[in-house]
Image: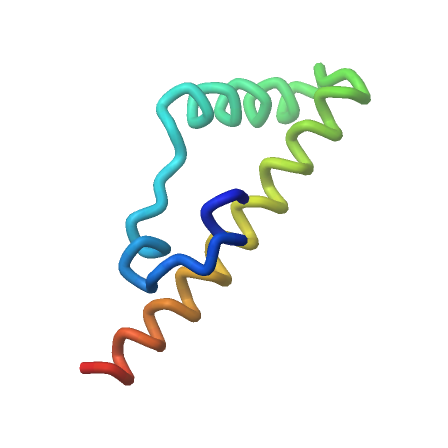
Length: 71
C-alpha cells in the first residue's frame, strides 16, 4: 500500500509482486477458507489481502493504459 500511495511510476506499479511469505500466507488462508476452518480474525485478514490485491490490479490496469498511451 505504501508504494501505491507514493505516486509511483507506471513501471514501478507494473513491477509490484507479493513477497513469497505473503503468497504463502494467502494460499494457506484460502485453503483453510475452502475447508471452512477460518477464525473471524483470519477471515478479516484474508478479506484485507483480497482487497489489497484488487487495488493493485486496478493500479496495474491504469499503469498499463498510461504506458500504452505513452508509447
